[in-house]
Image (spheres, rainbow, N blue to C red):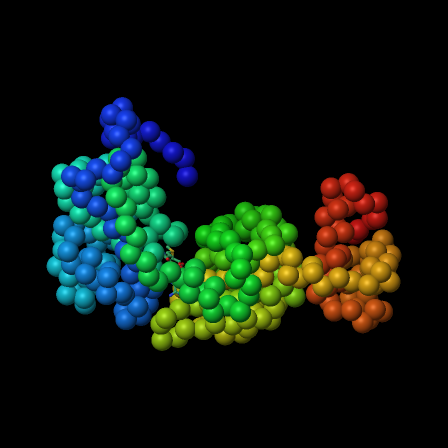
Amino acid sequence: MKEQPSSLNKKQTAAGNSVLNQNCGQLYIVATPIGNLQDISQRAITTLKNVDVIAAEDTRHSGRLLKQLDINTHCIALHEHNERQFAENVILKMMKGNNIALISDAGTPLVSDPGYHLVKLAHQNNIKVIPIPGPSALIAALSAAGLATDRFCFEGFVPAKHGQRKSFYAQRTKEVRTMVFYETPHRIVDSLTDLCAEFGDECRVVMARELTKTFETIRNDSAKNLLNWVIADNNQQKGEIVLVVQGYQAISQELLSEQSEHVIRTLLKELSLKQAVQLAVEITGEKKKKLYHFALSLKEEVSKGSESIDII
Ligand code: SAM
């Protein structure tokens, strides 16, 4: 996101004030449920009841949640399209001593949701920012995925258009960390198709759908099996979806024998990647996944000009 100078910021930095402004209100970043109302924390409820104003992504949507929780605090809209403009107004309110809570439609604000400009501006104006942690689809999916969690990266929404999505996935095939993506139900078949093409059919993927809700589904399988399952069952093309994809290193740690490497190299001189891998599985008895990833890495070396074999 591009950073833009703010008039509020200029006034404050001119004063050279780097300590928190004690006369100002505070900004609370409050996580709300991603499906199950019971996931709201006691601290979130208390905060939302006690602040002067709640800045919500969609006041009508959040109004339903607040009503259920018996919270009557005044709400104002702070969504993606008005964030820069309204952030300054919110800061002015806090400068007058008002405490403000930011919430999004669901989960943790700023995680693929508005709030970045407001939080940045609050820091620039020495206003205290207090997180009230709680649900996020990203962490919920990761915690239940059964893939490595020691290192991971969150990549937000997968691009909507086919070409962009393919290159987005292609750029990440060598990512060693577990990857977490947000995806929409109407694009899930196309997205898994592109994922298979770029990461390979055997890549391990977890689809976490409708987390914390009645039809919660979490499936850990190969990309190809997941794709077939989603195509066969229309229900899997509904609701909210997180994709968690195994990182490259975890796969490439399984090394091929020298002989198997020789076989696949030789076959790749005459055959397409798919044919070479299929035949190599029969000849060597190695796992398709290992051969596929080795063949893919050879192909990439060739395209960078460091290998001299011909690949169709
Ligand atoms: N701020 C939210 C968070 O902390 O997770 C994310 C907001 S983003 C606009 C919405 C996306 O998050 C959905 O399209 C979906 O990919 C994911 N998501 C949200 N709730 C979910 C749920 N209950 N189950 C699965 N994915 C969910």
